[in-house]
Each structure stands twice: as C-alpha cells, then as structure tokens.
Length: 200
Image (cartoon, rainbow, N blue to C red; front, side, top):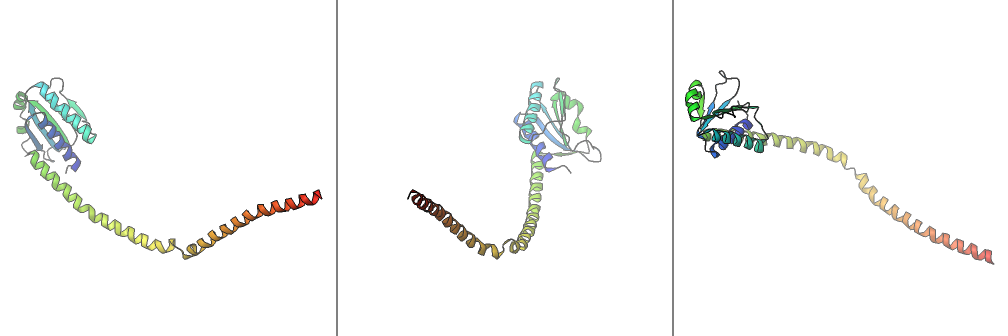
C-alpha cells in the first residue's frame, strides 16, 4: 500500500496540473500483481507542447518546494509530445492530445482503477485520521510509564538531610564573614600599638 506521503505528493502533482489548465486529468491505481514498478499513473494532456512543458515544470517546482522531492528522471521534455516524470511511487504522463489518443495508455492498463482527485483526497484524509487516532493511545501509555518512573525516583532524589543542612551552611558563612571582617581591624590595632611602643 502506498504511503501517506506518496499520496500527498500525487495530490500535489494533480493540483499543479489543474493550476496549469491540463485537460482530462486521471489517476490510475495500478494492479500490484501486474505492475511492480509503481503504484499510480497520473495522466493528463495539454493543448500544445509549450503547455506540456509548463505543466511538468509546475509539478517539479511544487513537489520540490513543498516536499523537497525531485523526480528520478524526466523524459521527452525536448519534443514535449509525451513527457514522463518518474517519482517512484507514481509516474506522471503529460501528453499532447494527439499522442494520448494514439497511445491509449488508459486502454493498455485495463486492470487499473481510475480514481478522481476527490476520491484520492478523501482516502488520504481517512488514512491520516486513522493514523492520528492510533497515535494518542501510544502517547498516553508512554506518559503513564514516565509518571511511574518519576514517582519511584522522587523519594530517592529528595533526602531530608540536605534541607536541614542548608541553613547551617548559610549561618557558617555569615560567621566566617564576621571573623574575616574582625581580623583586619585587630591587626591594624596591634600594628598601631607596636609602632607607638617602638617610638617611645
């Protein structure tokens, strides 16, 4: 089964075709038994060669910008009568009207199921909502495990001795500060007394 991301890419490619006024856009879901190469064909046609190039350019730009995905290969762009873009999970075929009628790709793939963009979109939404509904259960289970782990560790991390020891330390530092403050003054007095005794 194709991934959610590959379906999103396919829908973005179909939207790019619509934006460039491609005609008769069809998505063919290929039979896995018959085709191990790809999951879908995206087939459309333009009215002339210039439009065909514009359609493929738009697909390439959009998928690169939105998903950071490039086609594996692009063929037929120079003649632009049948441009093929290989995105692994799906292949885009942009035909001229004459070449599409001549090759009859849809007729060759009789076992393929034709999907509309709307059908693929609803299928994708269902799959995303199904994956999201599964996700919170895993998250809550993980949260419960974390809470239990924290609860078991809390008593070990909070010994009562450290709380009682804290005020004694602060008191000791005050006493040492007082002693340090007194000692320079005493030393000054002693030196003054000794110097006056020597003068006498």
